[in-house]
Length: 73
Image 1 (cartoon, rainbow, N blue to C red):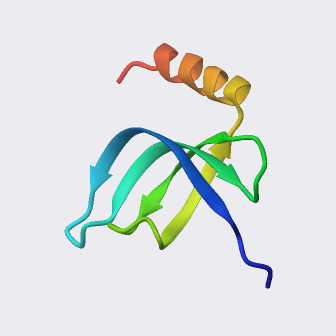
Image 2 (image 1 turned 30 degrees about the vertical axis):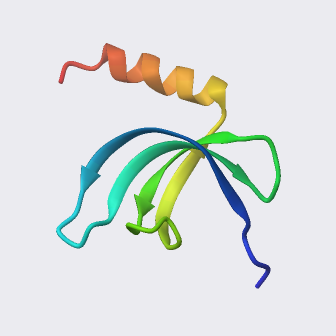
């Protein structure tokens, strides 16, 4: 399996933290030297290991924001 390269461009915010120190974060990340995208996933404290997550373009993030704003939470 090919190595996945990533560069953390900007940490936007932390959503939650587990008892083991892993944090669910929204970040701007460049995957495999491509243009950065918005990324929501769990990260180990040292940002070396990661869990499964979702990656969104700016347009997709805007649509998600609009959907969330319409919800009654």
